[in-house]
Image 1 (cartoon, helix red, strand yellow):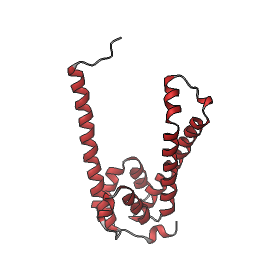
Image 2: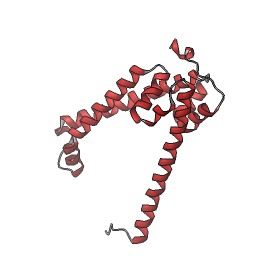
Image 3: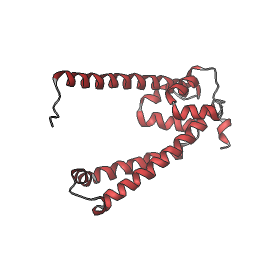
Image 4: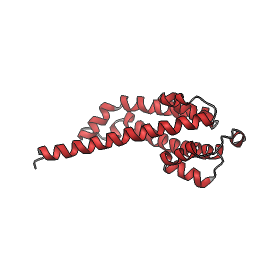
Amino acid sequence: MNTTLTTAQAAAVGGLFGAFAVFGVILYILLIIAGWRILRKAGEPGWKIIIPIYGLYTLYKIVNMRAWFWITFLLNCVLAVLTIAAQNDINAYNAGTLSASQSPLLIATVIFVFISAIFDFIVTIIYSYRLSKAFGHGIGFTIGLFFLPFIFQFVIAFSKDKYNKKAIAKD
């Protein structure tokens, strides 16, 4: 079976990757614009959103979730370290020279991936709820923020909604 690409196929794949890259950059810029305006509405300097980890921390801060941010951040750092440490075992497993049961590090990494994913899922739901509530919205808006954050963050950013820290203070 021949798996080499023709020039036309390679150009099509390259064009597809290029289109996805452009779409990703545009989406990232739009999220920065929305985040900037959300932070300004909450009384924080908008420029903070440009700095990746600090911007996310500031978003968590305005919804009173600083501790959740640090727990999530540390869990994901541990996951990254585990994945790097298990990379040789992952390569051996993919090559078929190692079974999963032969590598406790690989088993720990897989288990930690699931734990981290579930935790991130729960934290994202709570964050979406608290952001929605902080700007005077309800459960329907929370669902929108969870599934389509780039659209619903723009709604918060460009609407006349006011930030109300007291709405989330009692949670």
